[in-house]
Image (cartoon, rainbow, N blue to C red; front, side, top):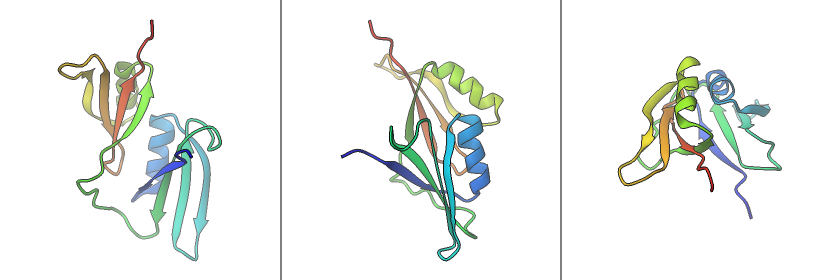
Amino acid sequence: MRILHTMLRVGDLNSSIAFYTEVLGMKLLRRNDYPEGKFTLAFLGYQNEVDGAVLELTYNWGVESYELGNAYGHIAIEVDDAYKACERVKQRGGKVIREAGTRQGSTTVLAFIEDPDGYQIEFIQKKISG
């Protein structure tokens, strides 16, 4: 078994695709409209679906926003340098909600950003082995 994808419902598909591709550097792998169901699916990732888990964005036609609820946490993305990743996000118009740094009692460098729908994304800096 393996994880295939995580699905997020979004209110503006084009804005969300732009965020994940232009701000976070993912690739749009496929996008399909389903007129009979009045929804569109877009799959994005850093690698293809055969090689790793991807993100599925679901746009239900005519729905502009969702309540995120209090059970959802975040998506985690490993980055080489969390400080530089936050700077790139800001330069591309993204929102950093917790600057890169360590937590008390930890040496892991992390940061949090937010996508256009308010979903949180955690950057976890890759640890240098040695």
